[in-house]
Structure formats: structure tokens, C-alpha cells
Image (cartoon, rainbow, N blue to C red; front, side):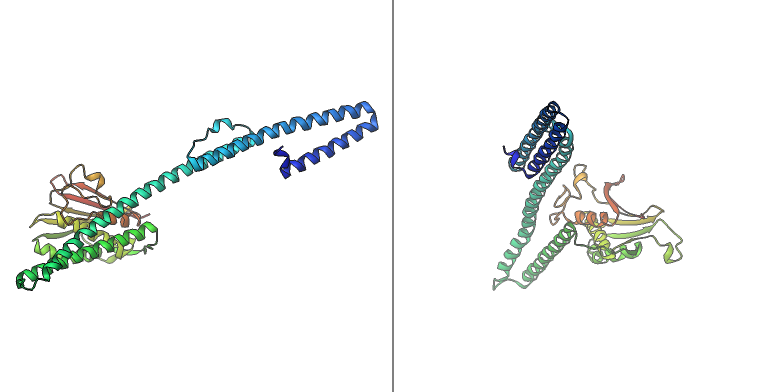
Amino acid sequence: MNMIRNPEIQKSLLAHMLLAILAVAVGWLHDIYTAICLLLFSALYILVHYLFTANRYRKLKQLSLELDSMLHNNTPIDFQRYREGELSILESELSKMTLRLGEQAMALANDKQFLADSMADISHQIRSPLTSSNLILSLLMEQELPTDRRRQLLRELTQLLSRIDWLVESLLKMSKMDAGTVTFKCRPILIPELIRQAAEPLLIPMELREQTLDIISDMPGISNDADIPQFHGDFAWSTEAVLNILKNCMEHTPIGGQIEVSFAQNAIFTEIVIEDNGPGFDQEDLPHLFERFYKGKNASENSVGIGLALARMIVTQQNGTLKAENRPEGGARFVMKFYTA
């Protein structure tokens, strides 16, 4: 009876009855037996048609209930029972939809877990220098603190505040890229200029560590700017990526060590290779180096674990790749490629 309340069924039933009456009227003009046969045939046709229709509506109702159960109770649906005509097409589309919904639900769960882990890592990374800063401030409040000790504490406090500033700034940059709000410029970038700009903030720390920075070009005999290796990208963001890699090499290179940067270009890509003669990477760390907040076995105490992750995000969003490996002779090697296409 619920099916009869459907306006479409009511219109269809009215049309069939009008056709049946018309058929009986035409048969009556011929003779009474023809009219009776047409009446019986029309009634039988209407009965069979609406029996099949009722069966189809019953399956649609069952499918609707199962979809509702799936959406609210995560109950799986057996689509093998819906294999006829329009239901088969509907089954195919619903199967795709449920698969997509399942993937989205899993992705949302993973994002939620990742967000929770990231917030825990961020709070830990910020809490540590803040705790140290508060401790230093309490020591600085002592009236009888010697001048040399006070200066030392002020230097340590400055370093901690710089670390917090760098951490917050890096996290904001990563968040902007995650949200897709960063617009990368597409302009020619000369590799030598990029390396010099990225290395400039690290020259004094390298000098204090007695480290040397060598820049080597695999393309000697360059006569004009057109022949200098270059790629199209965003200069500021690319400088950030190279800076983070150089900083990582500096922190893991011993006193008096060497950092070497080489570059080359071919018809397919422009390549920048940054190497050091430090201890290199542990084999267990290699697959996870570019994960956020991951700290390898050889990481320094001040390492946060977001510099390399940020560098890869910048490179990949500019049609490039970034990988890390160990040098055969010892040390770390970072290979950065920006593709021409």
C-alpha cells in the first residue's frame, strides 16, 4: 500500500487503467468476447507489472535502509543482491560512493591522528626552550649574580628565543603549504646566486666551527648568464630549502669538516648536490629523514625535525625531487633536482 502513495505510481496506474478502458471499449465494438479477453489481459498485465514494480521498490527500500545503516553504524552492504536493470547501474555507482566514503573516513581518521601527534610534538618542542628560558630568567633575577655569568645566561637566553622564533616560523610555513595558500613564483633562478644567498646566514657559524664550504660547478667555461645552470621557481622559498639542508649538514659535520655543494644542468633537470664529511645517516633513519618531527640517531640535541621536511615540501611543490643518501667514502649527500617540464 505504501507504493500506491507514490505520485509516480498513481499517475502510472491511472494511465494503465485509462488504456485498459480504451482497449475494452474498442473490443466491445467488435463483440463482447473480445472485450472480456482484453479486460482480462489488461488486468493481468497491470497486476504483473505492479508486482515487479513492488518487488523493485522493496529492494530499493532495503538498499536505502542498508545505506542508512552504513552511514550511521558502519555496517557493510552486500551489493551482490542488487543485480537487475537500473538497480545494477545504481549498485555500481553506490559501490563507488561507499568505497570513496570509506577512503575519506580513513583519511580523516589519519589526519586527526596526525594532527594530534603534531600538536603533541609542537607543544613538546616549544615547551622545552620555554622551560629553559624561565629557568634562565629566574637566575638573572639574582642580585649577586657575577657579570660573566649574567652575560653567559643572556647569550643562552638569546639562543633559546631564536630557536623558538625559528620553530614557530617554520611551522607557520608548513601550515601554509598544507593549506594550499602559498603561491610559488615562477622565475629564472641562477644556481650560484641561490647557493650564495642560502649559505650567507651560515658563514659565521661555519667559521666558528672551522668548517669550509666549497662550491663546485660541473659546467666549466660559462661565459654568460644564459649558460649558468638555472631553473624556474620561487627564489625565496628555494633559498629556504637549500638553507635548511646546509644547516643540517653544518650541524652534523665535525669541527674542521667540509661541506661541498655542486650543481649541473641537462635537458631534463637542474641538479644541486650538497655533501658533507660527517658521520652520515643510520640505515634505519634513511626512510624517515623527511618526516615531520623525526629525529635520527645522530641528530643533535637542538634538532627539531622539521627542517628537512620543510625543504622537501618546497622542492616537490616546484616540480622537483629531494633525496638523501650516504656517500661511499662517508658522510651525507642530498640530491635536489628541478625538472624542466
